[in-house]
Image (cartoon, rainbow, N blue to C red; front, side, top):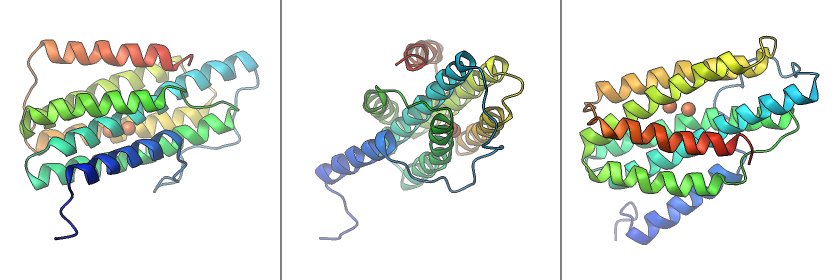
Length: 212
Ligand SMILES: [Fe+2]
Ligand SMILES: [Fe+2]
């Protein structure tokens, strides 16, 4: 048997491994974390607030990994699968940066990270089953919504927390690039109820991950 051909069980185990790594692992990013690590809010309440926002961003990146892994699983064309896996790998930097910032703030990631990952794999696989162009449309819409969400966080982060701001700004710039890549690869616009549903689902996650 060709060792590169994966059975459904192999793929499932690969996903479980990726989910555990994303939720509990500490892989370093491929690029250095933006900003100056010594900048941290002195006020404990403010520090907790920033940690809440960075926990939400970390959970969002876990969800992005899950979505793209799920979509890759159901992708039909080899090129689409490769593009989705590449996107997930690039989100790995964001995951590492948010995790590092949480450490610096003396905080932790969301306890529900494995749940965000598993739920996102299921949603991603559904999007993938709808066809590659729809799946790429889903990726473009995800990136658009994340970009808007990060813009909101930039308004809520303290003006003098240059470290957290630099991380979020670089993530935002990367997400714009990911969205453009999805459109260039042939993304199809999604029918109206879908983006609204996506916003609703993301809202549940971000509202919860700030606290838990
Ligand atoms: Fe990201
Ligand atoms: Fe992205």
